[in-house]
Each structure stands twice: as structure tokens, then as C-alpha cells.
Length: 287
Length: 276
Image 1 (cartoon, helix red, strand yellow):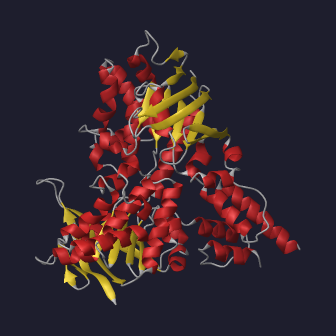
Image 2: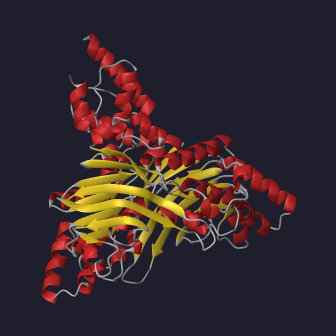
Image 3: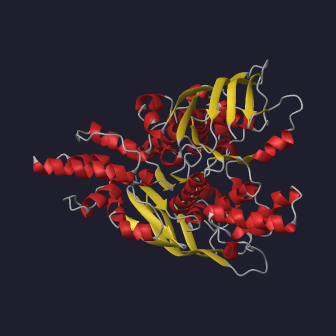
């Protein structure tokens, strides 16, 4: 399973005074099992791009292939493609509606026409993936859960459909630090499985640097940068100029350096920064 | 001078008629100085948003009392006196914008206060200048970025000329630039003398306050200037909160045996310490 986006163009409100080119020739290849962080400021085209992957939007020109099948081609069944793509929108807890966590997660598989046994298996499996203990949570009301637990319950509902692509739009926004860490650890587990493509849309550069194999930067409807977190976050001035920025720890080290602390390197996590500063202080003491 | 005072504030609610009451706030006493900048931190469900909503009378205490500039929020007749003194900015700018034109949106609040048209015009202009959105006054809010929309929402509150503004996670939905823009506006309002109460999950924002209040299970568990509060990093972690990165790194370097003093919060202080 892979995704191929070939030179797509999308225009909102074409022919009206509000005409806006949202995507202006985007090409992107995503390999099987890859974890992609998609970043860009509000209005850069991130949501428009991912809505092309399950055919919610049709490009004005260009083509989109998911698992070899062209989206929107004659004879292509949108339903078949949507089954492969799991979508988690912003603030997904508003989508919870059942009496129990179990029923909420079972809703999708039941609608696929799966038997009770198969549905049960999928509910258990997806709760394990997101890290919600079955005995503790299955019979609870989703509305009594904490913010982080609610997010996990919704994500479990998406995973229960066994999608081949998981698209997550700001899954940690508005959560407290502990719940953010929980959701991030869940993403790392999903990544370690390598069973699905994950596309993570986020304004949190620290999260993206931590979990993504590859970071794709959208700006003005085009792919401006694409590479490993280290490669992409080395472009600090460019990222600054388009309203993004660096992961917090990378930014802190940059500010220490600007302040006159003579320390090399652009660490992407706190452990790495600790090592660099430890070495710096040892060398300073030896001098 | 105290502008906001809570006296043994209790707030309980029931999920439905049969269920027992849940205590969101269990006896909070806090005095907030006029012109100060207070950050309130706590995990989801700690009661911090409930406290904020009690400050501008969106919620009324079920026990104890809240005073804003001397007006008791639960007194009948005090409601508008409270609300014109304590404004509130929420997380999602889209839910706070009511008009199709930026300046109409900002005028909405003062119009409802029954202010004369000339005065409204003046206030709208001042408020839009204060948030640096005057150039966009004739635009439609939906054409703006998230940060710009949030600034318009702030202008709508500023135009009411409140003495105090409570910000409830105003940057949670914004991109990095939007976050910076909103924090810059918040700091400049504070410099202009407005009392600022900021509820946030971002420790780097809380560091900029004069005072940090930590809430847990409906109570205040820590209260003090940022260096004093963040020096208690182990207790904060036990409350499942984060500490600012500067504090985290200084802790780790101390544990490795380096001579790094406690209480470093600002990046400039860390630079000064490392450059010795």
C-alpha cells in the first residue's frame, strides 16, 4: 500500500471574487508503513491536501493514487477507498455519541456488516493499540473520560475499521501535558507496528520531530520542504519566515547560541540537548 | 489593590438530576492584584476553566463568593457591572465571532453596552490598533488566519474597556505564528495596565507571567512567582504537569553534577549561567 499524489491543483470558489488557489501543483509519494508529519501554517493547504486522499475533494488537475487505484477514476468505488482511509478530524471527541466506549468503537465494524465475534475482536484489538484497558474502559460512558482518553477512544474507533492509512489532524491540541504524552506514545506504538501509513497534521513541531520519519512542509499550496526531521528543521530561517518555527528544544538551543553559549548542534529532543550541554560544561570546566 | 477576589469559592454541578453533585472547585481563596499577570495551570479537569468562568459570572458560585472590582458576581443587578470589567477570550476564535465584517464584530460588545455611536467608533479603532488589526477592519473574519481571528476576538473584548481579561487557552488551536501573535498582544495589553489571567497548558507562556497558580482537583496547590513554582519541578511532575524546558534541562545538568543554580526559568538567565 502506497500513496502517490501527482501534480494536483485545487481552487476554492473558482470564478468568484473569493477564488483561492489552495493547492498549486502538489506531488508527493508516501511509502508503505511510512509516518509523515505534515506541517504548514493555517491556510497553507494541509487539510485540502488530505481531503483529496479519500476523494472528499476532487482535484482540478493532477491525479491521486491510493494503493495503486486512482481516486475519482471511472469505475473506482469511493466507498472502497474510504474504507482504507481512517480520518481523525480536529477535536474528534465531539464525534463520540454512544452509551459506552465499547459501542462507540464497535459502531464502524458493525456497519461494515461484521459478525458479533469479529466486531468484538476488533474492539479489543483497537483498544489495545491505543492503550485503553478493555476491562477498565469498555463499559464506561465515553463522556466520563478525560480529554486524552476520549481522543484515544475515537482513534480506537477509526483503527477498528482496519484502515491502511491513518490521517490525524492535530491529535494533541488542547490536551494537558500528560494526555499529550499519552497520545504521542500511542502514535509511537502505531508507528512501531508499521502496518499503516500515518499522516500527522500538527502545529506542534516538537511532536512532529519526535514521531515522524519524514516531514513535509506545505506553503502557499506547494511542497516547500520534504525530508527527515533533522533535515527539515535545519531550515530555521525559512520555517520562521513562513510562520512555523522549530521544535521547542531546538529553538531553546538556538537562543542559547545566539546569547553567546558556544554549543554546536541542533538537537531535536531533550536527551540530545542534555548530552550537548553536558559536554559543553565539561569542556568549559577543563579550560 | 485587589481586583478579583474569591472567598472560599465552591462550584458543584450535577450531570443529571439523579447523579450526585461533582465538585469542580472545592473552596478556593485567591486575590488577584489590579494590573498583574497571573497564569493558571492544571491538568484537564483540575477546575481551572471553571474558576475562569466564575470570574466573569458565566458561572455563579454554589458556595462562597467571587468579587470583581468590588461587585459580587452572584448579586442580582451586578451581572453587567462584572462583565464590563472582566472580559473573556476563549480557545476557538470561530465560536467568538458574530459579524461578517471585522469592525462590526468589534463593535458588537460596546453596542450592547448602550454606548454612543461616536464613542463606539473611537473604541473600535483603538481596540483594532491595540491588536494590530486596524488595516483589516473592512475584511470578512473568515478570510483571516487563526491568529488574526483570535486577535479580532480579543479586540471585541478590549472595546468593552474591561479592567481585566481572562484568556482560556487562547493559543491552543493556533499555528506557531498565531500563538506568538496572540502572546505579543496579551503582553502589550498587560503593559497597558489591563489585569491578565491566562489559562494555559504551555509552560513557556506561563513563564512570562508575574505569578503562576497551579490547580489540581479543584484546589490551588501552588502559588507564587514562576521561578519559585517551577523550582518545585518534582512536585509538578507528580501532578502530571510539565515544567518549562529551561527548568527541565537545568535539572538534568544539576543531576549530572554541574553547578547550575535553582530557579532559572528565563532563557537569558540560562545563558548567563552557562556563559560563566
